[in-house]
Length: 471
Image (tube, rainbow, N blue to C red; front, side, top):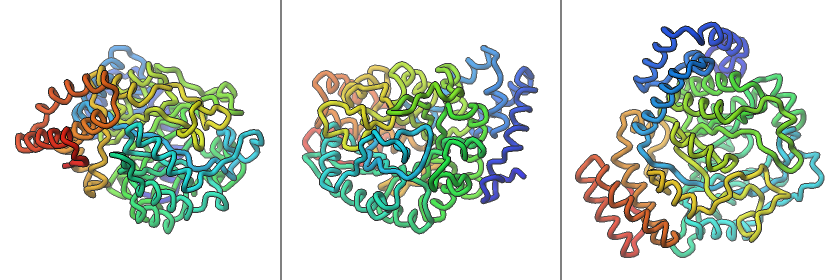
Protein backbone atom coordinates (compact mmCIF):
# COMPACT_ATOMS: atom_id res chain seq x y z
CA UNK A 1 0.00 0.00 0.00
CA UNK A 2 1.53 3.34 -1.07
CA UNK A 3 1.96 5.76 1.83
CA UNK A 4 4.55 8.57 1.63
CA UNK A 5 4.35 9.02 5.42
CA UNK A 6 5.15 5.38 6.17
CA UNK A 7 8.63 4.50 7.45
CA UNK A 8 8.54 1.15 5.64
CA UNK A 9 10.50 1.09 2.38
CA UNK A 10 7.94 -0.95 0.46
CA UNK A 11 5.16 1.46 1.44
CA UNK A 12 6.81 4.79 0.63
CA UNK A 13 8.39 3.29 -2.51
CA UNK A 14 5.45 1.18 -3.60
CA UNK A 15 6.09 -1.14 -6.57
CA UNK A 16 2.35 -1.22 -7.37
CA UNK A 17 2.14 2.58 -7.26
CA UNK A 18 5.09 2.91 -9.66
CA UNK A 19 3.56 0.42 -12.13
CA UNK A 20 0.23 2.23 -11.89
CA UNK A 21 2.04 5.58 -12.41
CA UNK A 22 3.80 4.30 -15.53
CA UNK A 23 0.51 3.00 -16.91
CA UNK A 24 -1.15 6.36 -16.18
CA UNK A 25 1.76 8.19 -17.87
CA UNK A 26 1.49 6.01 -21.00
CA UNK A 27 -2.25 6.59 -21.15
CA UNK A 28 -1.89 10.38 -20.78
CA UNK A 29 1.36 11.22 -22.57
CA UNK A 30 -0.57 12.63 -25.55
CA UNK A 31 -3.26 14.26 -23.42
CA UNK A 32 -2.12 17.83 -24.13
CA UNK A 33 -4.70 19.39 -21.85
CA UNK A 34 -3.28 17.44 -18.89
CA UNK A 35 0.34 18.04 -20.00
CA UNK A 36 -0.35 21.79 -20.11
CA UNK A 37 -1.96 21.67 -16.65
CA UNK A 38 1.11 19.91 -15.23
CA UNK A 39 3.50 22.40 -16.84
CA UNK A 40 1.34 25.26 -15.49
CA UNK A 41 1.61 23.72 -12.00
CA UNK A 42 5.41 23.39 -12.39
CA UNK A 43 5.55 27.11 -13.17
CA UNK A 44 4.29 27.81 -9.64
CA UNK A 45 7.71 26.50 -8.48
CA UNK A 46 6.21 24.29 -5.76
CA UNK A 47 7.25 21.06 -7.48
CA UNK A 48 5.42 18.12 -9.06
CA UNK A 49 4.34 14.71 -7.80
CA UNK A 50 5.98 11.54 -9.13
CA UNK A 51 2.84 10.89 -11.17
CA UNK A 52 2.70 14.33 -12.77
CA UNK A 53 6.40 14.29 -13.60
CA UNK A 54 6.12 10.78 -15.07
CA UNK A 55 3.49 12.03 -17.54
CA UNK A 56 5.95 14.70 -18.73
CA UNK A 57 8.74 12.12 -18.99
CA UNK A 58 6.54 9.91 -21.18
CA UNK A 59 5.37 12.83 -23.33
CA UNK A 60 7.40 13.08 -26.55
CA UNK A 61 5.83 16.20 -28.02
CA UNK A 62 8.79 18.34 -29.08
CA UNK A 63 7.10 21.67 -28.37
CA UNK A 64 6.25 20.58 -24.83
CA UNK A 65 9.78 19.26 -24.23
CA UNK A 66 11.18 22.66 -25.30
CA UNK A 67 8.79 24.34 -22.88
CA UNK A 68 9.93 22.02 -20.05
CA UNK A 69 13.61 22.76 -20.81
CA UNK A 70 13.02 26.53 -20.82
CA UNK A 71 11.15 26.25 -17.51
CA UNK A 72 13.90 24.09 -15.95
CA UNK A 73 16.50 26.69 -16.95
CA UNK A 74 14.40 29.51 -15.49
CA UNK A 75 13.67 27.67 -12.22
CA UNK A 76 17.36 26.91 -11.82
CA UNK A 77 18.14 30.64 -12.24
CA UNK A 78 15.36 31.62 -9.81
CA UNK A 79 16.55 29.28 -7.04
CA UNK A 80 20.29 29.06 -7.62
CA UNK A 81 21.19 32.00 -9.87
CA UNK A 82 24.14 31.33 -12.17
CA UNK A 83 26.29 29.73 -9.46
CA UNK A 84 27.82 26.27 -9.82
CA UNK A 85 29.18 24.74 -6.61
CA UNK A 86 32.50 22.91 -6.95
CA UNK A 87 33.58 19.77 -5.07
CA UNK A 88 35.82 16.73 -5.36
CA UNK A 89 35.41 13.12 -4.24
CA UNK A 90 38.06 11.65 -1.93
CA UNK A 91 38.29 7.85 -1.89
CA UNK A 92 39.49 6.60 1.50
CA UNK A 93 39.29 2.84 1.00
CA UNK A 94 38.19 0.35 -1.65
CA UNK A 95 37.88 -2.57 0.76
CA UNK A 96 34.30 -3.81 0.46
CA UNK A 97 32.36 -6.88 1.62
CA UNK A 98 29.45 -6.42 -0.80
CA UNK A 99 28.92 -8.27 -4.05
CA UNK A 100 27.42 -5.44 -6.15
CA UNK A 101 27.63 -6.69 -9.73
CA UNK A 102 28.10 -3.22 -11.30
CA UNK A 103 30.96 -1.98 -9.05
CA UNK A 104 34.63 -3.02 -9.40
CA UNK A 105 35.08 -2.83 -5.62
CA UNK A 106 32.91 -5.95 -5.18
CA UNK A 107 34.32 -8.61 -2.90
CA UNK A 108 35.15 -11.19 -5.60
CA UNK A 109 37.22 -8.85 -7.78
CA UNK A 110 40.65 -10.34 -7.10
CA UNK A 111 42.68 -8.29 -9.55
CA UNK A 112 41.98 -4.85 -8.13
CA UNK A 113 44.64 -3.59 -5.71
CA UNK A 114 42.95 -3.13 -2.33
CA UNK A 115 44.01 0.00 -0.54
CA UNK A 116 43.06 1.98 2.53
CA UNK A 117 44.60 5.36 3.23
CA UNK A 118 46.42 5.95 6.51
CA UNK A 119 45.83 9.31 8.22
CA UNK A 120 49.24 10.46 6.89
CA UNK A 121 48.19 9.50 3.35
CA UNK A 122 44.86 11.30 3.80
CA UNK A 123 46.82 14.41 4.77
CA UNK A 124 48.84 14.21 1.52
CA UNK A 125 45.71 13.71 -0.57
CA UNK A 126 43.99 16.65 1.11
CA UNK A 127 47.00 18.93 0.61
CA UNK A 128 47.00 17.95 -3.10
CA UNK A 129 43.29 18.87 -3.25
CA UNK A 130 43.85 22.12 -1.35
CA UNK A 131 46.66 23.01 -3.76
CA UNK A 132 44.15 22.77 -6.61
CA UNK A 133 41.78 25.10 -4.73
CA UNK A 134 39.13 22.70 -3.46
CA UNK A 135 37.20 23.60 -0.30
CA UNK A 136 34.48 20.93 -0.31
CA UNK A 137 35.01 17.16 -0.41
CA UNK A 138 32.76 14.13 -0.64
CA UNK A 139 34.46 11.21 1.08
CA UNK A 140 33.83 7.71 -0.24
CA UNK A 141 34.60 4.29 1.22
CA UNK A 142 33.52 0.72 0.54
CA UNK A 143 31.47 -1.13 3.16
CA UNK A 144 33.77 -3.20 5.32
CA UNK A 145 33.18 -3.30 9.10
CA UNK A 146 36.73 -4.58 9.73
CA UNK A 147 38.75 -2.30 7.42
CA UNK A 148 36.47 0.74 7.30
CA UNK A 149 34.65 0.89 10.66
CA UNK A 150 32.84 4.10 11.60
CA UNK A 151 35.79 5.01 13.86
CA UNK A 152 38.07 5.10 10.80
CA UNK A 153 35.62 7.38 8.95
CA UNK A 154 35.32 9.71 11.97
CA UNK A 155 39.09 9.87 12.44
CA UNK A 156 39.50 10.64 8.74
CA UNK A 157 36.98 13.51 8.92
CA UNK A 158 38.86 14.96 11.90
CA UNK A 159 42.13 14.72 9.99
CA UNK A 160 40.65 16.43 6.91
CA UNK A 161 39.23 19.37 8.87
CA UNK A 162 42.52 19.83 10.78
CA UNK A 163 44.74 20.30 7.71
CA UNK A 164 45.67 23.92 7.07
CA UNK A 165 48.18 24.31 4.25
CA UNK A 166 49.14 27.76 2.90
CA UNK A 167 45.70 29.34 2.34
CA UNK A 168 44.04 25.95 1.89
CA UNK A 169 41.27 24.55 4.07
CA UNK A 170 38.57 21.98 3.55
CA UNK A 171 35.51 23.70 4.95
CA UNK A 172 32.88 21.05 4.28
CA UNK A 173 33.10 17.26 4.21
CA UNK A 174 30.13 15.43 2.72
CA UNK A 175 29.99 11.70 3.37
CA UNK A 176 29.04 8.92 0.98
CA UNK A 177 29.25 5.66 2.93
CA UNK A 178 27.02 2.61 3.29
CA UNK A 179 23.72 2.64 5.16
CA UNK A 180 24.35 2.50 8.89
CA UNK A 181 22.68 2.89 12.31
CA UNK A 182 21.04 5.94 13.93
CA UNK A 183 23.86 5.94 16.49
CA UNK A 184 26.51 6.10 13.75
CA UNK A 185 24.65 8.87 11.95
CA UNK A 186 24.65 10.78 15.23
CA UNK A 187 28.43 10.38 15.40
CA UNK A 188 28.80 11.65 11.82
CA UNK A 189 26.66 14.67 12.70
CA UNK A 190 28.85 15.38 15.74
CA UNK A 191 31.93 15.12 13.50
CA UNK A 192 30.59 18.11 11.56
CA UNK A 193 29.71 16.53 8.25
CA UNK A 194 27.80 18.44 5.59
CA UNK A 195 25.46 16.23 3.56
CA UNK A 196 25.06 12.48 3.99
CA UNK A 197 24.83 11.00 0.51
CA UNK A 198 23.63 7.51 -0.32
CA UNK A 199 22.71 6.32 -3.78
CA UNK A 200 19.80 3.95 -3.93
CA UNK A 201 21.27 2.39 -7.11
CA UNK A 202 17.79 1.08 -8.04
CA UNK A 203 14.34 1.39 -6.47
CA UNK A 204 13.17 -1.85 -8.10
CA UNK A 205 13.31 -4.29 -5.16
CA UNK A 206 13.68 -7.48 -7.18
CA UNK A 207 16.42 -5.99 -9.37
CA UNK A 208 18.05 -4.49 -6.30
CA UNK A 209 18.37 -7.89 -4.65
CA UNK A 210 19.79 -9.46 -7.83
CA UNK A 211 22.30 -6.63 -8.31
CA UNK A 212 23.40 -6.91 -4.67
CA UNK A 213 23.49 -10.72 -4.28
CA UNK A 214 25.75 -10.82 -1.20
CA UNK A 215 26.81 -8.62 1.68
CA UNK A 216 24.89 -6.29 4.00
CA UNK A 217 23.83 -4.11 1.06
CA UNK A 218 21.59 -6.97 -0.11
CA UNK A 219 19.00 -5.81 2.46
CA UNK A 220 16.75 -3.53 0.36
CA UNK A 221 14.67 -2.16 3.24
CA UNK A 222 17.67 -1.34 5.46
CA UNK A 223 19.32 0.52 2.57
CA UNK A 224 16.19 2.36 1.41
CA UNK A 225 15.25 3.47 4.95
CA UNK A 226 18.76 4.83 5.64
CA UNK A 227 17.79 8.48 5.12
CA UNK A 228 15.12 8.24 7.81
CA UNK A 229 17.71 6.90 10.25
CA UNK A 230 20.13 9.67 9.21
CA UNK A 231 17.44 12.29 9.88
CA UNK A 232 16.67 10.66 13.23
CA UNK A 233 20.40 10.88 14.02
CA UNK A 234 20.27 14.64 13.47
CA UNK A 235 21.64 14.87 9.93
CA UNK A 236 19.22 17.22 8.21
CA UNK A 237 20.93 17.44 4.82
CA UNK A 238 20.68 14.16 2.90
CA UNK A 239 21.44 13.42 -0.73
CA UNK A 240 19.57 10.92 -2.94
CA UNK A 241 20.58 9.35 -6.24
CA UNK A 242 20.02 6.39 -8.51
CA UNK A 243 22.49 4.75 -10.88
CA UNK A 244 20.73 5.22 -14.20
CA UNK A 245 21.23 2.23 -16.45
CA UNK A 246 20.63 -0.59 -13.94
CA UNK A 247 16.83 -0.67 -14.25
CA UNK A 248 14.33 0.95 -16.60
CA UNK A 249 14.77 4.70 -16.27
CA UNK A 250 11.09 5.57 -15.97
CA UNK A 251 10.75 3.23 -12.99
CA UNK A 252 13.80 4.79 -11.30
CA UNK A 253 12.62 8.32 -11.98
CA UNK A 254 9.25 7.67 -10.31
CA UNK A 255 10.95 5.94 -7.34
CA UNK A 256 13.41 8.80 -6.88
CA UNK A 257 10.63 11.39 -6.75
CA UNK A 258 8.61 9.21 -4.36
CA UNK A 259 11.62 9.11 -2.05
CA UNK A 260 11.83 12.93 -2.17
CA UNK A 261 8.07 13.16 -1.42
CA UNK A 262 8.53 10.75 1.49
CA UNK A 263 11.30 12.84 3.09
CA UNK A 264 9.21 15.99 2.71
CA UNK A 265 6.09 14.26 4.14
CA UNK A 266 7.84 12.73 7.17
CA UNK A 267 10.62 15.19 8.00
CA UNK A 268 9.30 18.41 6.48
CA UNK A 269 12.46 18.73 4.41
CA UNK A 270 13.21 17.05 1.10
CA UNK A 271 16.59 15.94 -0.26
CA UNK A 272 19.32 18.58 -0.03
CA UNK A 273 20.82 17.09 -3.19
CA UNK A 274 19.90 14.64 -5.94
CA UNK A 275 22.69 13.00 -7.95
CA UNK A 276 22.22 11.56 -11.43
CA UNK A 277 25.10 9.15 -12.12
CA UNK A 278 24.94 6.90 -15.18
CA UNK A 279 26.50 3.46 -15.29
CA UNK A 280 30.05 3.68 -16.70
CA UNK A 281 32.87 1.32 -17.64
CA UNK A 282 35.20 0.28 -14.80
CA UNK A 283 37.83 -2.35 -14.01
CA UNK A 284 35.78 -5.54 -14.52
CA UNK A 285 32.44 -3.89 -15.29
CA UNK A 286 31.10 -3.57 -18.81
CA UNK A 287 28.03 -1.29 -18.90
CA UNK A 288 26.91 -3.02 -22.12
CA UNK A 289 26.01 -6.04 -19.96
CA UNK A 290 23.20 -3.91 -18.55
CA UNK A 291 20.63 -3.26 -21.23
CA UNK A 292 18.92 -0.31 -19.54
CA UNK A 293 21.44 2.37 -20.52
CA UNK A 294 19.97 5.76 -21.39
CA UNK A 295 20.81 8.12 -24.22
CA UNK A 296 22.13 11.65 -23.67
CA UNK A 297 18.74 13.01 -24.80
CA UNK A 298 16.80 11.01 -22.19
CA UNK A 299 19.42 11.92 -19.58
CA UNK A 300 18.95 15.64 -20.31
CA UNK A 301 15.17 15.26 -20.06
CA UNK A 302 15.48 13.50 -16.68
CA UNK A 303 17.70 16.33 -15.36
CA UNK A 304 15.24 19.00 -16.53
CA UNK A 305 12.30 17.16 -14.98
CA UNK A 306 14.05 16.66 -11.63
CA UNK A 307 14.72 20.40 -11.57
CA UNK A 308 11.06 21.35 -12.11
CA UNK A 309 9.74 18.55 -9.86
CA UNK A 310 12.05 19.26 -6.88
CA UNK A 311 12.93 22.91 -7.57
CA UNK A 312 14.78 23.55 -4.29
CA UNK A 313 17.17 20.58 -4.47
CA UNK A 314 20.84 20.83 -5.38
CA UNK A 315 21.54 18.68 -8.43
CA UNK A 316 24.92 17.01 -8.73
CA UNK A 317 26.78 15.69 -11.76
CA UNK A 318 30.20 14.06 -11.62
CA UNK A 319 33.14 13.68 -13.98
CA UNK A 320 31.53 10.41 -15.15
CA UNK A 321 29.96 12.64 -17.78
CA UNK A 322 31.77 14.33 -20.66
CA UNK A 323 32.29 18.07 -20.94
CA UNK A 324 29.59 18.25 -23.65
CA UNK A 325 26.94 16.46 -21.55
CA UNK A 326 27.85 18.48 -18.45
CA UNK A 327 27.44 21.71 -20.39
CA UNK A 328 23.90 20.74 -21.46
CA UNK A 329 22.65 19.59 -18.06
CA UNK A 330 24.15 22.52 -16.14
CA UNK A 331 21.83 24.69 -18.21
CA UNK A 332 18.86 22.41 -17.40
CA UNK A 333 19.22 22.31 -13.65
CA UNK A 334 22.51 20.90 -12.35
CA UNK A 335 23.92 23.15 -9.61
CA UNK A 336 26.96 21.21 -8.32
CA UNK A 337 29.80 19.58 -10.26
CA UNK A 338 33.04 17.87 -9.40
CA UNK A 339 36.28 18.97 -10.99
CA UNK A 340 39.64 17.23 -11.55
CA UNK A 341 38.31 14.09 -9.84
CA UNK A 342 40.31 10.96 -9.18
CA UNK A 343 38.10 7.96 -8.42
CA UNK A 344 40.83 5.71 -7.03
CA UNK A 345 42.20 5.45 -3.50
CA UNK A 346 45.24 7.72 -3.24
CA UNK A 347 44.72 9.06 -6.76
CA UNK A 348 45.44 12.75 -6.08
CA UNK A 349 49.06 12.27 -5.02
CA UNK A 350 49.91 10.17 -8.09
CA UNK A 351 51.39 11.90 -11.11
CA UNK A 352 49.56 9.67 -13.61
CA UNK A 353 45.85 8.91 -13.27
CA UNK A 354 45.70 5.27 -12.07
CA UNK A 355 43.24 3.24 -14.16
CA UNK A 356 43.54 -0.14 -12.47
CA UNK A 357 41.80 0.93 -9.28
CA UNK A 358 39.25 3.54 -10.41
CA UNK A 359 35.66 3.05 -9.33
CA UNK A 360 34.55 4.29 -12.74
CA UNK A 361 35.99 5.83 -15.90
CA UNK A 362 36.39 9.58 -15.66
CA UNK A 363 35.14 11.20 -18.87
CA UNK A 364 35.96 14.81 -17.98
CA UNK A 365 39.69 14.79 -17.18
CA UNK A 366 40.37 18.53 -17.14
CA UNK A 367 42.17 20.29 -14.29
CA UNK A 368 40.16 22.31 -11.77
CA UNK A 369 41.58 25.53 -13.26
CA UNK A 370 40.34 24.49 -16.71
CA UNK A 371 36.88 23.58 -15.39
CA UNK A 372 36.61 26.89 -13.51
CA UNK A 373 37.64 28.86 -16.61
CA UNK A 374 35.18 26.91 -18.80
CA UNK A 375 32.30 27.64 -16.40
CA UNK A 376 33.12 31.35 -16.32
CA UNK A 377 33.33 31.49 -20.12
CA UNK A 378 29.80 30.03 -20.17
CA UNK A 379 28.65 32.83 -17.82
CA UNK A 380 28.53 30.80 -14.57
CA UNK A 381 30.11 31.65 -11.23
CA UNK A 382 32.15 28.70 -9.89
CA UNK A 383 31.45 28.75 -6.15
CA UNK A 384 33.61 27.24 -3.40
CA UNK A 385 31.16 28.44 -0.76
CA UNK A 386 30.43 26.37 2.36
CA UNK A 387 28.79 29.16 4.38
CA UNK A 388 25.27 27.75 4.86
CA UNK A 389 26.56 24.61 6.54
CA UNK A 390 28.96 26.59 8.75
CA UNK A 391 26.31 29.17 9.67
CA UNK A 392 23.81 26.44 10.59
CA UNK A 393 21.62 27.08 7.54
CA UNK A 394 20.90 23.40 6.96
CA UNK A 395 17.78 21.28 6.62
CA UNK A 396 14.55 23.27 6.83
CA UNK A 397 16.42 26.54 7.49
CA UNK A 398 18.22 26.24 4.16
CA UNK A 399 15.07 25.06 2.38
CA UNK A 400 12.95 27.97 3.62
CA UNK A 401 15.63 30.43 2.43
CA UNK A 402 15.86 28.65 -0.90
CA UNK A 403 12.11 28.39 -1.39
CA UNK A 404 11.70 32.10 -0.55
CA UNK A 405 14.30 33.02 -3.18
CA UNK A 406 16.49 34.71 -0.54
CA UNK A 407 19.61 32.85 -1.57
CA UNK A 408 20.81 35.66 -3.88
CA UNK A 409 21.61 37.81 -0.84
CA UNK A 410 23.92 35.29 0.80
CA UNK A 411 24.94 32.67 -1.77
CA UNK A 412 25.67 35.11 -4.59
CA UNK A 413 28.14 37.27 -2.60
CA UNK A 414 29.60 34.15 -0.94
CA UNK A 415 30.21 32.64 -4.38
CA UNK A 416 31.99 35.79 -5.55
CA UNK A 417 34.18 35.96 -2.44
CA UNK A 418 35.20 32.29 -2.60
CA UNK A 419 35.86 32.60 -6.34
CA UNK A 420 38.07 35.62 -5.57
CA UNK A 421 40.04 33.45 -3.10
CA UNK A 422 40.51 30.83 -5.81
CA UNK A 423 41.68 33.43 -8.32
CA UNK A 424 44.20 34.91 -5.85
CA UNK A 425 45.58 31.61 -4.56
CA UNK A 426 45.33 28.98 -7.30
CA UNK A 427 44.25 30.27 -10.72
CA UNK A 428 46.37 30.55 -13.84
CA UNK A 429 46.83 34.15 -15.13
CA UNK A 430 44.32 33.52 -17.94
CA UNK A 431 41.67 32.17 -15.55
CA UNK A 432 42.29 35.01 -13.12
CA UNK A 433 41.78 37.65 -15.81
CA UNK A 434 38.42 36.17 -16.86
CA UNK A 435 37.38 35.76 -13.20
CA UNK A 436 38.19 39.33 -12.16
CA UNK A 437 36.07 40.64 -15.02
CA UNK A 438 33.19 38.32 -14.07
CA UNK A 439 33.30 39.36 -10.39
CA UNK A 440 33.33 43.06 -11.32
CA UNK A 441 30.11 42.54 -13.31
CA UNK A 442 28.37 40.07 -11.01
CA UNK A 443 28.78 42.04 -7.78
CA UNK A 444 26.03 44.36 -9.06
CA UNK A 445 23.60 41.42 -9.14
CA UNK A 446 23.58 41.22 -5.32
CA UNK A 447 20.04 42.54 -4.64
CA UNK A 448 20.50 44.25 -1.25
CA UNK A 449 22.62 47.37 -1.37
CA UNK A 450 24.05 46.88 2.14
CA UNK A 451 25.11 43.30 1.35
CA UNK A 452 26.59 44.47 -1.96
CA UNK A 453 28.74 47.13 -0.24
CA UNK A 454 30.03 44.67 2.39
CA UNK A 455 30.80 42.18 -0.39
CA UNK A 456 32.81 44.81 -2.30
CA UNK A 457 34.78 45.62 0.88
CA UNK A 458 35.49 41.94 1.46
CA UNK A 459 36.69 41.47 -2.13
CA UNK A 460 39.28 44.21 -1.49
CA UNK A 461 40.26 42.53 1.80
CA UNK A 462 40.76 39.22 -0.03
CA UNK A 463 42.98 41.03 -2.54
CA UNK A 464 45.00 42.22 0.48
CA UNK A 465 45.53 38.70 1.83
CA UNK A 466 42.57 38.14 4.17
CA UNK A 467 40.46 34.99 3.77
CA UNK A 468 37.18 33.30 4.68
CA UNK A 469 34.47 35.94 4.65
CA UNK A 470 30.88 34.80 4.56
CA UNK A 471 27.29 35.94 4.89
